[in-house]
Each structure stands twice: as C-alpha cells, then as structure tokens.
Amino acid sequence: MMHEPEPALKKAMNLLKELSEDEEFRQQYEARQKFLRDQVSMMEGAREEGLKKGEAESKRKIAMNMLTLGLDQATIIKATGLTPSELVELQQEKE
Image (cartoon, rainbow, N blue to C red; front, side, top):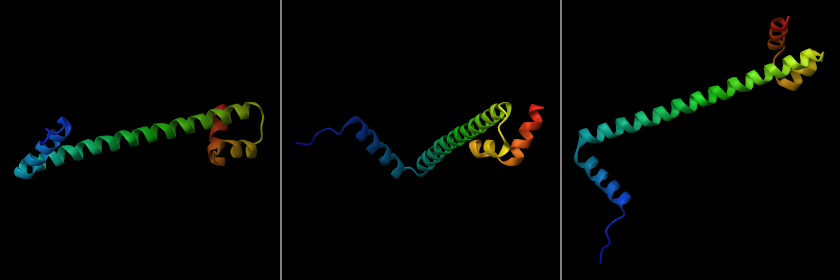
C-alpha cells in the first residue's frame, strides 16, 4: 500500500514537475532564486560593514580614553590596533 507523500514533499514534487515541463516557468523560478540569494548576500555584506564600523568606533573611543589618561602612543597603538596616522588624527580631533 502506497502512502500519500508528506505535504512538503508533495509540494516539492509538484514544483519539480512544473519546472521540468515549462521552460519559462523554470527561468522565472531561477531568476527569483537568484534575486533571493542576492538579497541575502547584500544583507550579510551590510551586516559585516556595520560590525566593522562599530569595531573601529570602539577602538577610537578606547584610544581617546587612553589619550586622556596620558598613556604613550606606542601603548595606545599596541592596545587598540590603530595605526600611528589614525592615532595622530584622533589626537588632532581631541585638541
């Protein structure tokens, strides 16, 4: 006795049948899938960029606090990972 396929499996089987029978439908489906993948990729890229900006801002705030405490440049650079030119720029902003 054959069992009725699960609803998700039945839906997938119907989609596969439609894709294999209709070239235009298949192209539309593939275009939609590409669009969805591109959207996910853009969102991931924006998330990564936001994280990097947040990390950079945190480093700058820490460096500013260290400057206020009177720590030397070498220590601040080592602790924050800022470049010497970034630290000079930060010092100029502080003044």
